[in-house]
Length: 402
Image (cartoon, rainbow, N blue to C red):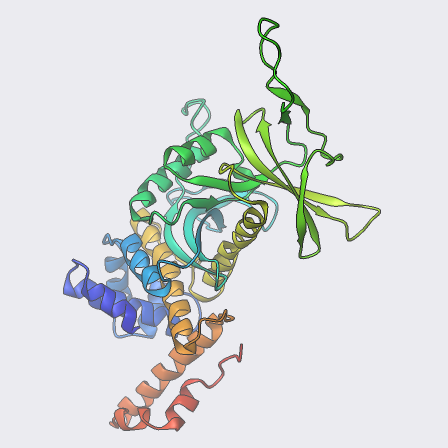
């Protein structure tokens, strides 16, 4: 927690809030069970009422996450922005923002909450870090909302709030197939970013005409040269074989998006009787096909962020019904996950990719907390024991060897 403490000391916040945040991050990694106000109070000296009161205060989590990420990633390291919403199960009739949202785990819309998250993906270490998380506000009823008011507007508003914290090197934003929409792509482009995403398998696209121009006076010059048949890739440029998949690329016009895209066809021929393919795209026409493929593949790291936060730092366990407390809880959960990943990376002292085990981090925090509790009850000092190898053995008891 030394890095988090160093960064918090440099922020313009009050001393009580600084002390509370350090206690909160440590306690989330220490406790067993759900991350609720009452359970947090069981593993720290603060009461449940203190946690509830502090959760109602505003804090610049984006600034803290930005500082944490900058400490973990050198500026010259390749990185990618990833964005994705995630469903949060939540019961109760008085929870703000509770509505029907898409639950990808069940493949249907369900009633609950939704958060939208921007993360920075370290392309060398294959690890994602949360930059910003925000609860998605529910859409008004069909009678009250404007025809052009959609969830995409909520996501773009979140993007505009995050943009001041982005570095110039972070210019590619990877999303899933839901965001292959004109409003989203235009909004991202207006912010100076390039979108990387996935198209429908039956996307309506056209080849550009590359033949000789018509003679002067014989009519308008030809622009397009027929509709793309995705079963016939003879007019595509074959790039390479990556991970057993064949990559083809071409610059095409998308009819409904009304723009030119760099398209990469990922063809899977592992079953010759049933070939499969996926269509990836980028608004950067100069991006090479292999890089586009690996950028979209790296987007999946944000799913691991959601998985770890739901399993280990209590992302879905907040019992509050106040909008500010919910916002604080979502951010605290994902920021704590950032701290855990960075601490584990620093402990390895290597630039090679490592397998992050948040269960091991939590085991170490709990063991350390338990040792301190035992020594304090007997009136012993723990300082002398921390210098022995036995202390580290006890601290890592139960940790998973990744």
